Image (cartoon, rainbow, N blue to C red; front, top):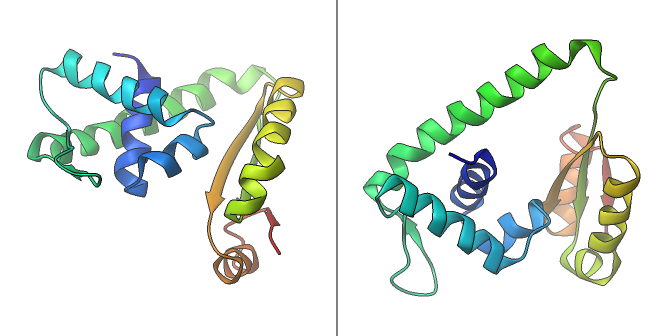
Length: 146
């Protein structure tokens, strides 16, 4: 089972949006859908009910979300344990408004990731007031807003 596909499902389910999950993982919406479809094929169950433009978790999807969370937590634990002799990975929690995200932030983040492969990015897309609150609470490290 490909953990990247599990991660794609986890973020779609958590954010309740394929487009937001795609932005978070720096993927296209079609790549996200493809990953989830492949995961569904491998598991032999439907994880998402795609009856209309919105989706909802199926019963199997809700059960698998619990396992996906555990799998990803275990992956982080293994990386932390096994990577103890390697340079520390740097994590950055970034918040942005939609217009910044689509105008220049995604290409800039792609260049940043290429230059610093150990950099782990977490992206949150929200309105300016919510982003300001998140940065003040320490949930985000940096915000790009107007």
